[in-house]
Image 1 (cartoon, one colour):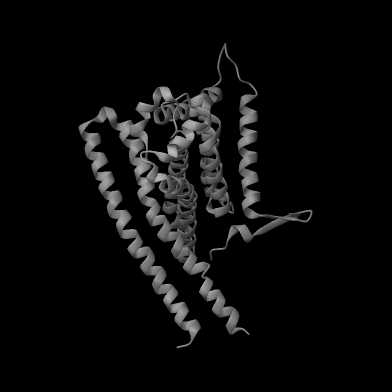
Image 2 (image 1 turned 135 degrees about the horizontal axis):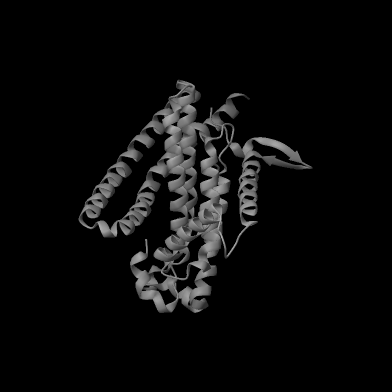
Length: 92
Length: 231
C-alpha cells in the first residue's frame, strides 16, 4: 500500500471517528440540559424566561465541543495538510 | 463540493481582489444600512406613529431588555456593539435562504473579526466600568495563582466565540450541499428551515455571550448582583 492510499483511507476513517465520538458526549450533555431545564420550567413557570436564557447559553457552551470535532473533521476532509504534502511529492 | 468562500474571487477592485466573503458582507451591510435609513427617515415622537416605527422600537427595546437582564447595568452603554452584532449576524444568517447567497458568517475570517471586536471590547468596557485598577483586579481573582488561567480564558473565550459561529453556519452549508447532491428537490427544504432557526439562535447566542464577556467587570455598585451571571 503506497502513501497516497494509506493517507486517504486513514483520513476518511479518522474523520468518521472524529465526528462520531465527538458527537456522542455533547449530544448526551445537551439532552441532560434540556431535560433538566424542562423539569425546572414545569416546576417554576414564572422563571421560564431566565431558565430559557441560561439554557441557550449552556447549550452553546456544550455544543462548542461538538463544533470543534466538526471543524477538525472538515479540516481532515477538505484541507488535509498531509494529503496535500503527499500529492505534492508524488507529482514530482 | 465544498469550496472555501475566502478563495472565491468575485471581482477586482483595482489591484485588490475582492473575495466572496467581503462581497457578501458588503451586501448585508448595504441591506441593513438602507433599511435603517429608509425606516428612520420618518421617525416621530408625537401624533400618529407608524407601524414600522413600532416594529423598530420593539426590536430595540427587546435587545435593551435582554442586555439589562444579563448585564444588570445601563443597557444603552452596550447597545451599539451588542445590537450591531445581533442584527448583522441575524441578517446574514437569514439571507442564506436566497439562492446563490454565500453566508459570510460561514467563513472563519468574518467570525474571527467579530470575536476580535469582542476581545478588544472586554478591556474597553472593563476600564470604563471599574477603572484600570478594577479591571486588572479581575486577573488575580480569586487568588493570584489563577493569573495564567484568567489570561488564557480571555483568549480561549474569543476562539470559542469565533469557532462556534463558524462551525454552526458551516455545518448548515455542508448539510444542505450534501443533501442537494443526493436529492435536489424538496429534501433539502426542512434542513434549510432548520438552518433559519439555528441561524437566529446563533445570532442570539453570539450577542448573549458577548454581553456576558463584556459586562464581566461590572461597576462597583452592582457587583454583588452580577456574580451569579458569570458563565
